[in-house]
Image (tube, rainbow, N blue to C red; front, side, top):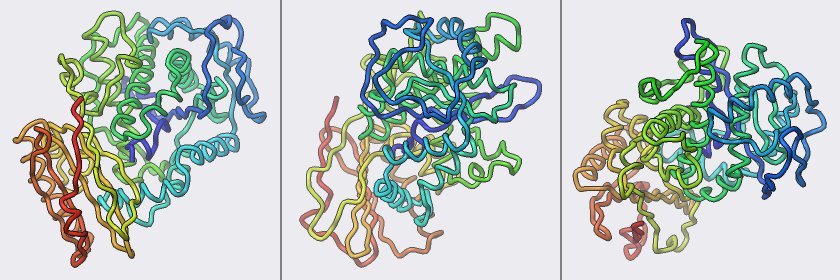
Length: 457
């Protein structure tokens, strides 16, 4: 999965007034992009909505002149704070629940069709991160329908706001989504996400850049409204560090059942782009003049770069190696799913089974690239995973943690499995190879160890 595949470009914290004297509810802002290829000419007048040759907004979404007026008033300040000048004014409209639900189903059908959802669920169930009986699509629909208050449809260049949004939240929703509209005009969010769709970790990093930039701009605007000053978030302490470890489920009062019962990996996928991306963008603005937008040439290439500034900023930057399996699956075995976890995914896996967030952070540090594949034959599953590391010490730390995580994972599950965790070297990089097999089932001797190659950038 791209961690984001569990909620890719799907939801996020759209109003964390964390500095206020009183806590506020945490509305979730949907940012689903359309899937059509298109580009604006950039020549449309700002006082007109941009005519586009693509899908029009749903008929049920009735444009509201008050929303359009509010958006027009907010736009100049958001251009200044976000560092993105508008090429045209995005449409703004209301969306009822039926329209939203139809839109969610359309997006899932395109981005996460049933067979792909089953494959992702199987892979993450083998890692012990979700139940193997989980209906991923249904869970995501329930979660998003429960949380979403606004979304930007890139196909229609239209910002939709739910009809039930509280008036006090309305401007905040508009601010966040207007930033996405500006991002889309300059960087084509749909094409951006398509370009990294086969690399789960890189996809999550791109998502963090998109959402972190919008969230930081939104927070600065909120702070300015609250203080009556021209707020500057770069003068504040590290926001990402202050908010690290926040658990949306813990903020609920029982009124958010889908969120509160979602597995850890889904909750983490939901919040990381907003909190991790927020901290990354704030550091980018602090360190580099002119408030650069963390997209285009400035986009982070891995969750490691989002999590650790030096991995991004050092020259040369710490780029992940590509791990590619060089042999096809053995006879009678079918590959069900392949992807990577990245540093963030490894953290979640270790924390889930070892119970310690700090230990998981330490053991995931030094990640250099990874790839897994889930194979199946006659009802048996084999999970092959290769992780490259920056140095021997990092590889050794992870190998010990992985052994403990798998021991805990299967002691809870009761499954009769055989897991081997081996260290090796490949192309000058230390690697850890993990094979998770049913006891008594063997892969062909000439197929093991899983052959692979590393491509160093």
